[in-house]
Image 1 (tube, rainbow, N blue to C red):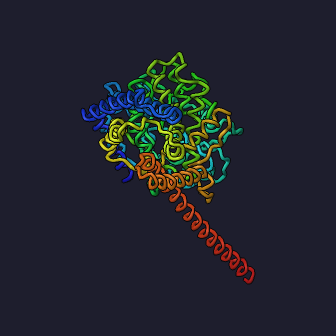
Image 2 (image 1 turned 60 degrees about the vertical axis):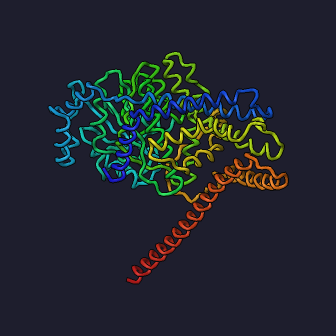
Image 3 (image 1 turned 90 degrees about the vertical axis):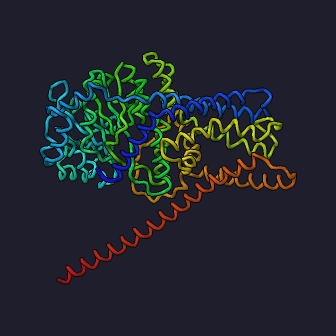
Length: 559
């Protein structure tokens, strides 16, 4: 593995150990108690303020508390190791060797050609494994790195590039690297359709999906295939981790994903509710074929497919071991499109096939899928909470009784929220303010996603980090408008405070929101300047190349 991957794995191992600590139980117990105390405080008639802001606050906070409690429950349940005796026994026999660890040592010492042709066995029977790399316009160098790494995975397998972009350059790359290439005749149903077509022309017993920008560790099959000794297991999911923490967007988005994969997804094992995230996942072909293939009714084919497999009675496993490293969004355009696609897919499931109504799921599975598919309603909660300070500043409407001392409100509020920050610091080694900021300013994306799902508006798929010089302000206009509104509100609030000689918690709250959105707008400006600089540099290079080509033609003509 590369150094960044080793660092990520060290971090994942540290988090996995800390989650078994009694301290985590103490923190989560305190957070749960704090949540109920805060909820009780909100519902007390004596603490209620004006009807409109009180209702907005109550709706927003109840949703956040419910999501928080479901997360605490999941995290507390996650302290189990899915690698049981059956798994270790199967791993020892995967390469038909007496001891699995020695088999890996032997493979590492051999050349790549031998290591990737060693047969693998499940139930002492040789198996066929396909590695699918779905591509659709990603940079050719990313595809190349992924294809080479996939080809060199330990164990006999076929690596296949599934090209939905009809690219002759990708086809030539596949031939040069020495991997298979599949181009389907009809490009329908996006990524799920691409994989289903590959299933129709291949015959592997299992298949590994790697997105075009995820470079796999050679041990990925060694770590995942042994789980399939359980004949009822449909898939094994591994984390999405990223090594491109280069700027504001990539750093904040990466930490956001780490929280989910390190704290939440592990806990879902306890309820047999760990779901597929679209890449770095190994499926049993027979299980997927039993539900008619990868589900194609949504861009979130991963969650839909997981849901159908769990309804069918199949098991799933998530392991926190980092076995492939990819690229997180680096621009606001890429981040906005990714979040819009993910949120729209989640809302589609929530609206069209709400997990709470799925009779063939267990109660635990229903609650877990409900927590997942309802998460992006957080966008509405953020909007409602943003409205509270302006309502008080402009109209003197308060969500809580003005007779309540500020210190009492702060104490009740912090019991729930501060404990979550403590949990992040303890388990993740810190908490990035940029992540909290990016999460809050993303609320327009999530609200737009809800209405896209409600109106069944289709979302085109885009590669994560394709080269584009599109201005970030084409994707964050609403955030700019919000910043201007909050800034004006803060100015009015400051003038009002000076005139009345009274401090207002709403002014401080609104000023903080103004800073958050102002910093975000500043980062968008910085990104826009960087893109302009890149564009100018590209034009200069194109001019120099054109000049060199012209000089070459003139010289050849003279000869």
